Length: 334
Ligand SMILES: [Zn+2]
Image 1 (cartoon, helix red, strand yellow):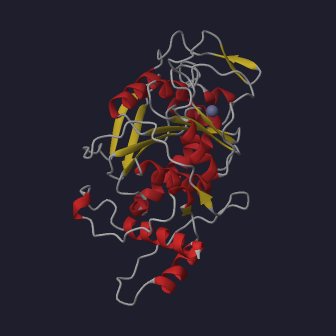
Image 2 (cartoon, rainbow, N blue to C red):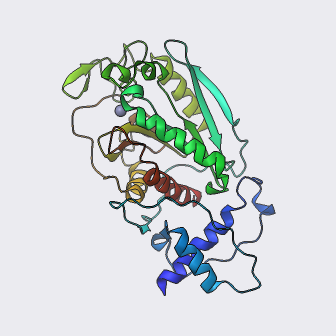
Image 3 (spheres, rainbow, N blue to C red):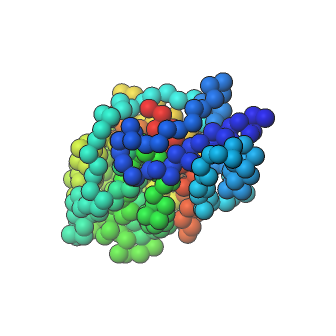
């Protein structure tokens, strides 16, 4: 019975999603069914298959109800990912933005690279909670993170109803276009000045930095590189509800912990890790890291994490899309 009741919740959520992007004014949205009150939020089930949703709708809907348009695309779970996802209990960790917010342009330039290439961002959805996704910080060396960003852009261009009314995504596919030009070699990890852009941020920055068993250039000072300075300004101006940086291929979700509130990003990492199936909750300990992007974002009061894909040649689209769906529901509850 629980399965059917909780699945009905999913149905209600999905039916609401049809109206995403029509307007940012919730007052004009069609009235939604009331959720049962006897099921705690922590037991909401997510990520059913389309077939399950369809079958449950037929079983539970009255003949007079308007038919629900079920999404035609739901990613098939990979064998290693649980098909049923329990949301961790919700703890607010970031001050919610005002009820109304002027959306960013659908695409915009926010800076340029060391070699003068444009840094571009794309916005999907019009909700007041902004989730920022950053791919390609290590560029050519981790080019599957760029592929993932491009797959997500295509997904939300074609299926805008997958974004909840409360949510906007800001997608930055390639923070390091200089390194992308160098290709999938270790030099493709760095920007045009030879700096590692994930060692150049302002919380825990050090004059010497490491990657693997060797040294990398962290810049002469925090934010002395145009890419990190531009993105830091954008984050401060836009105050996203969460910022995720994509890497490969350490297989895990690693929360930013720098600053006065080292646990600020833990819930974000838990939601994403649980829904995606990537390990979460631990510190990155393969080698010492300093001055990373999520560390600084956490230190200014915004939850942030590194998402390390499990492979270096696959976008791992399905499991990341599923995690972003769970993340939307979690943040929309703020
Ligand atoms: Zn990386």
